[in-house]
Image (cartoon, rainbow, N blue to C red; front, side, top):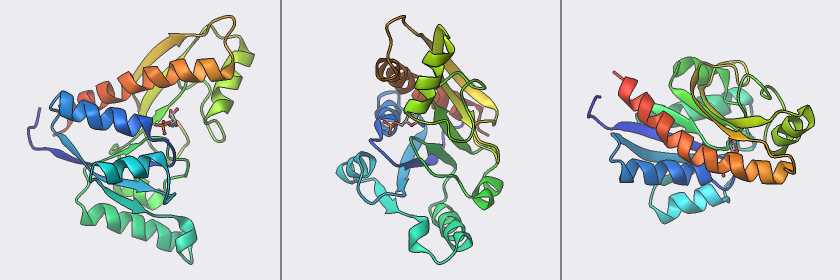
Length: 199
Ligand code: GRF
């Protein structure tokens, strides 16, 4: 493992429970990484509050602040370059990453998805929709997947997966809770693996 700390940006839109899990794991396991930026399309959300509380730079960046999508993409790229970001971790970021950013960070952008990809992934499959689809399908296993981000939704190379059972009396909400707990263990483990593999 390279001991030089990797500079991480975490992208969030919501509560940021995965962001918190990553943050605590980095400290507790002394991982060679530092979260230097929390970027969100929302100025107010749990993730941004957490960043402010722990004095991590929080950056509100949204398409609505720019005249064109290209200007938004350039601003995101510039923000990442200025901060010398090595890895981008998506943690409940509900926006598409601009293609220009994906092209500039090949296999350096990571996402966590609440199903066992390639099942129940793709455009429009996020949040409770995933768990509703899993239950409707009659699957007895679900789980979470950490994968690289490429131009296609949820299709990038898989880094790590963990599974959980789907119980006969599960609702989408009870399954979501079980999967989220699984994510909180999986994402730090995947980051650790990734850091081990970084040059
Ligand atoms: C998680 O279920 C994750 O898989 C998905 O968005 C949710 C984020 O939750 N990408 P949180 O904001 O980390 O609590």
